[in-house]
Image (cartoon, rainbow, N blue to C red; front, side, top):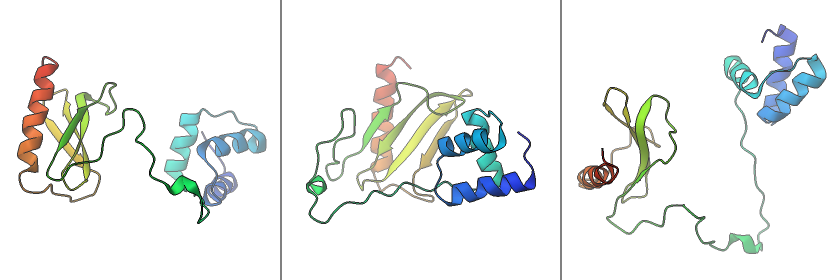
Length: 153
């Protein structure tokens, strides 16, 4: 999608003001008369170096929604001290991966794991530079091996 410098500046302004990708797509349609796909808009925003803002949720101090809610179905249960939980994705989430999943370490930190099409193992912690507690990697390897065997891999 080719936009003029003025149009690009306007897109940056919309994003800076908190517009979502859907909002930007609608604005481009109405303001510029173009009909980009959602993917086109996502790529445009990335190419412009604009950063989307997370929506803020405001909660009143006496709001009862602050109470601890039960986990959503399929969500990981709270970690017991010293435990590691490994899960395998049911749908392929990581492009180029044969199989992937996630792990929650005993300290509550999470990471994504995968095996690519060449059989190489990949490990991506949520926190850059994170190293799991001593012993957790061994537990992770054992559980991952069990999960993969159960799936015939």
